[in-house]
Picture 1 (cartoon, rainbow, N blue to C red):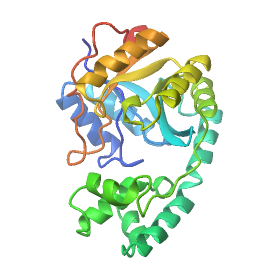
Picture 2: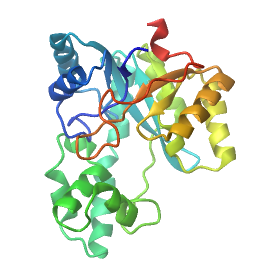
Picture 3: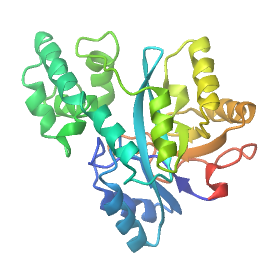
Length: 276
């Protein structure tokens, strides 16, 4: 089985390493096919491609688009995209535009919860100010000694119902798939086992994704348990979707799984890269 890692993040969004360092790490870890999929941003893809080629590593240009589905934030990965496609570039710019306002509202909410200076603190960890996110706030709060880990910050402050959580209206599922297809790419539902949906919302997401021409689903991912590998392999077969594999690597100290260290896809699915 090809060691493909088709989901990770650089400092261009909320990762801890620049694209060049990610390419080197992927090569060291035995990755043979690598994609950079920064959140709502394609600005790191040129550097990533050059670095991958220098390492002798096959590269896939990608992106992870934030959408709102049934009141939940869901992520759709686009693979084999043209990063210069006007429809995609303009759509991503629209998606990013609300992040600064949301971050300021998060900082105000955290201040009311006793966490002062969170916006300025989070900016210290941001490579691209347009992409300030909850992860940057969490890193600041760990450094400030408020919580021991990034996950603990999310659990206590930044998840739905907690004092620093501010919802954001992202793109629609229709938008994301349209932009990805306009850019010549394939759309993939990212880490579906992570979303806290009802069974009806979950099935409706897959139904609508398939109706809109979505191609794939992440089966083996750093966010899934081994049992979920089989669950989503079954859903891939049920919906006729191709299977993707990606660590969702953000950094050495934060990610459950390192680049290239996931188990292979189950034999029962068709890998998304088979037709490339």
